[in-house]
Length: 115
Image (tube, rainbow, N blue to C red; front, top):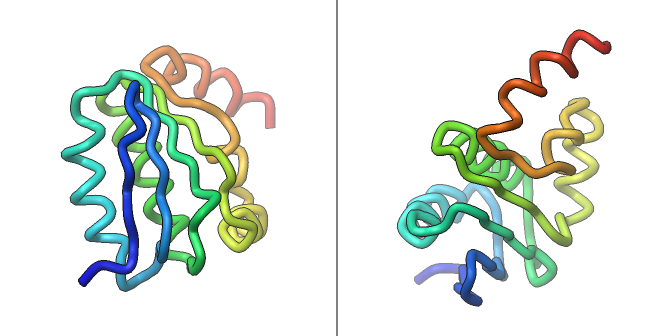
């Protein structure tokens, strides 16, 4: 029994609903790897996520990492407030607010020198 649903809306758009937590993050990651595989641009809407914790943030960061490694672009819509708050506290909220693609790897090195 899963407490989440990752719905494929077509053209790389997905809705995630239910729980995004320690109990579900690994299963969501496994399912997303299959569903994201055929897309160059991915958008995940989380407006229907009901419960989340720091594992939800870890999942988003893993998606960002995988997108960068696989030369894909990933965007997040309606990130749950709890995840945003954790990301702000950890000073990593910028990682969730932008899209990632293969072109970003060169801009990341120049933006890190601006700090």
